[in-house]
Amino acid sequence: MKLWFFLALFFLILRYPELSARYAAMGLHSWFECMVPALLPFMILSGIMIRQNLTERFAKVLSPLLKPVYRLNDNCVYGILLGFLCGFPMGARTASDLYERKRISKREASLLLAFCNNIGPVYFLNFLLPTIGMRRPLQILLCLCGMYGIPLLYGIFLRYSGFLLPEDTDHIRERSPSTAPAEPFLQSLDEAMQSGIAGITTLGGYMVLFNLLNLVPHTLLPLMGAGENLTLFAGCLLEITGGVTRCGAGLPFPVLVLMPIGGLSCVAQTASMIRNTDLSIKNYVIHKLIQTALSFGYYFLLRSFLF
Image (cartoon, rainbow, N blue to C red; front, side):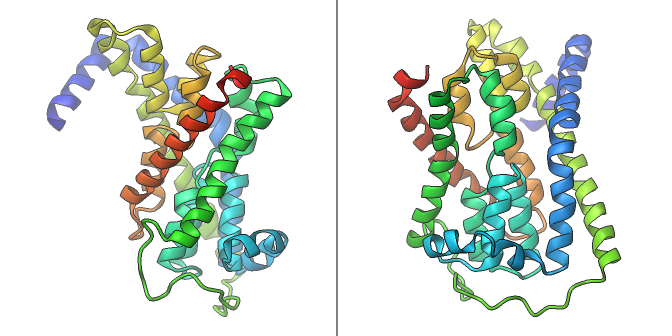
């Protein structure tokens, strides 16, 4: 089956070379314009802070607000902050980095991964909402509540229910700050720089590939009698940035519903971020599908105020 899929993709690339180049260029452009400036600095700075044992002190700024609610240590609070403020896939990368360097347990890393890997507010407010036509203050407020309120509440549910979280002996608990010595600063800088560049380059490859996969719905769905909206939705499902650009204001409801999971490209990028750990991508997808279903109900109930 896999062989036939790739043979068909090769055929479509050769059959539609101009369209293939346009889709690939769209992915490359989205990566260079949106991902590199928005994520690479945070990847490098976060890598330095983790290696310099600065995460707990940084997190103390908002610890009084988050710790009573989630009852997590300062390293986990740092993961929540990065995941919500810096944007996808920094939540997954931060959880993975903290877990690899033994700052948090597997259970804590799984918890962070389940609800902290989200679309960033800068991307959400400056690109996505204007593109899909959400410009009125009430629309923006309701969309913000849906985009970030649902995962925050879902995180509280997970924290106290343990749903799909691993049962290990090093369970969630308060910890004293890490006593591991910090690396030399220049070593931390060099390692964080190399790791950040490798990570952002990998993300670019995924964005190009999944935009290129739009050849499949673009060529096959019309042959099956599907309308243009279904083709556009399939594009969002494959790679959200390119899909939203092509949709414009035509499909605001399905685009907003897809935000928690972010499309197949986002899932693949998350898998890449955690591939050196034993964190479960399967459980991550289940959590994201649940949040997608919650988003569907939320936006459906508020459709008269939004659309």
